[in-house]
Image 1 (cartoon, helix red, strand yellow):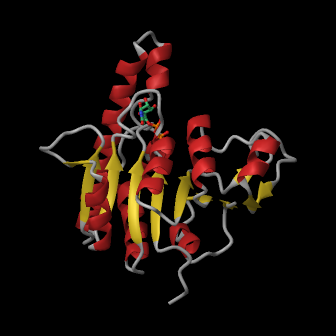
Image 2: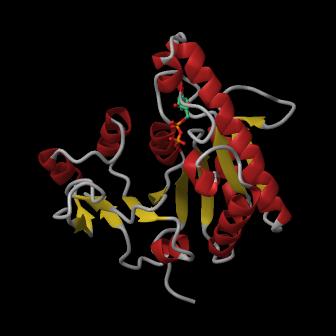
Length: 239
Ligand code: UDP
C-alpha cells in the first residue's frame, strides 16, 4: 500500500458532479461510481468528510436574478444540498460504507444536526460524514462550507473535485489556448495572479486557515485515491 499523504480529508463534491452529462438533477449511476471511488479511499483508512453542493438543482443567485428574494432563494439551494447528501449517503451505504449525514439546518427526521464534536467522533469511528446544508446561512457557498468544516474538524486537506477541469489554469482553458496549468501554487500567488479558484469568501477563509487545497478532475477514475497518495495530479495550493 502506498504511503498516504493525508489522514483526514474534506472532499467537496459540487452538485454538478452528481448530475452527470445532463448537468441537472441526481443521476444514480453517476453517484454510484463516485461512491465506489470514495469507498476505495475509505478502505485505505482515510477519514473522509464530504461537503455536497446543490448547483445541480438550484442556485440562489439564479433565483434572485429571476426576481426572488435572495435569502429565500438561497434556502432552496441549501435544501438541494440535503437531497444530494441523502442520495450520496444511500449509495455509500449500499456500497457497504457506514455514514452519517449532518445538516447545518436541523431536519432531525432525516439527518443529524451538524455538531462538530459528533462529526469528529464519527470520523474516528470509521464513518464517512456527509455535511449538507452548506454553512446554513444564505449568501454563502458550499465551497465556503467545505473550507469552514475542514478548519473545524482539523482536516489535513480539502479536495476540490471538479468536473472536466484538471486543475487551476492561468486563464480559462476553454477560451484561451495559451492557458497553462499550475501544478503548485501558494495562496499569495493566487492573489497576485488574480486567479479565480473559489468565491472570495471561501478564498479568504482558506487563506486565513492555511489548509492545503487540491483542485483535480473527478471525471478521471481513481483520482481521489491519487490525491491522498500525494501523486502529482491537479493543482495543489499550499502555503
Ligand atoms: N447555499 C447557501 N449557503 C451556503 C451554501 C449554499 O445559501 O452556505 C445555497 C446557495 O443558494 C447556492 C446553493 O445553495 O447557490 C447551492 O450551493 P453551491 O452553489 O455552493 O453548490 P455547488 O456549486 O457546489 O453545486
